[in-house]
Image (tube, rainbow, N blue to C red; front, side):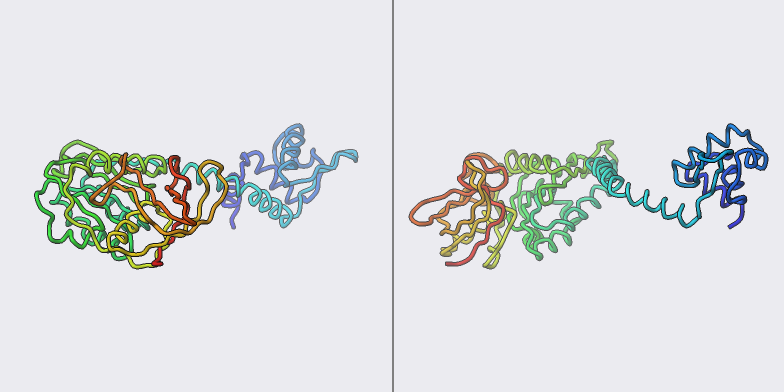
Length: 347
């Protein structure tokens, strides 16, 4: 490594040019008096004393002021490197924590001005979904996400699809959803994946490539359920049900409670003698609970005939030891149990 490169590296560690001169001079001497270093480096003796104290604090030198005159000693390079590595490792956890926090903050919202980018983001979010997708999209844009929706259905994702601006379900859509409705009117494109990430785009943005409107992509665990509630509560009820896929095979274990309720509903309609095992907590005491019972009823608002009292209400009623227990999902407050995981099986 040439002298210029060495100087540049030292400056990355916070050395000024004068500090570099002083430190390199000290390295060449190994150990010397302040006056010797000052003369060789072309700086004042007072400056050598000052910078030596700073370099000592940073682990580069040792100052022996128990002798007269004071001697300044360069620490062995391997000891300096060990010290720097130890300091770097010590701050790594804190840096990683702050970096994660900053990354999450910057990724919470993304503003999109291009229709093609909207299409790309929708495809990405569907591709990355693991449990549930809710999506409203005009019929003339369905082909844009055809492959991604088909793959999601094939891997067991619950796809709740509202196709707008059409009077009939396009034939291709029969393979793209678990539950589908149609509506003749335009509406915003709304997407959520696993209740945590999603997108909202104005209807006119999908109708034309040059509208001046903007879409928003979000990554926010509190915002996802709000968008689901808006879609299911405001738009889903005015649509006409045109597709309900066959229920998944049993046994089925789910942490997505809405998905478990839909599947339980379809199983009951097929006259399945259905048992559910629930892991969760009692709502009134927060004590953990593991419970198994026959599923005697469901409450939901996605599959006709619906029986929910508010848009996103979903619950199971289990009968165990002659008693009926109600089970809700995350944030349950009117049910007896808040479920974390549900396993459905035939009796």
